[in-house]
Length: 99
Image 1 (tube, one colour):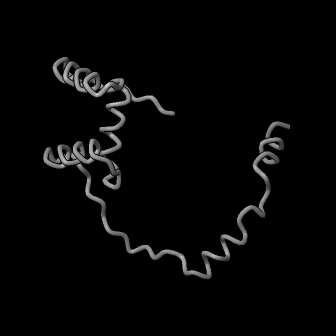
Image 2 (tube, rainbow, N blue to C red):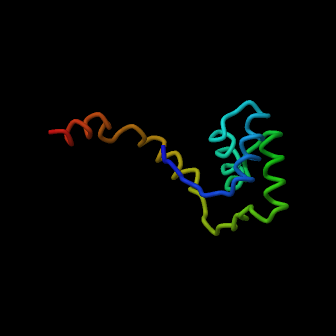
């Protein structure tokens, strides 16, 4: 897990703390939810949907850009599924790295 340090003014810090307390969560948990909502418009749920709406109105949501990427064909998908689990076990790779 990463740690992020932010510099925010006292007024914003008080409002953030108050909003987190009113929801029965930590400031860290509440801020994490806000940041997740800001970068992942696919999140669902009433509270996160409300946060996304606020962030959108504030112009803080980054719009996703459609991709020209084409997904795998059914055959490619089935081949990948069949090959899954046939490689070197991760425990073996870790053991090799410790020697």
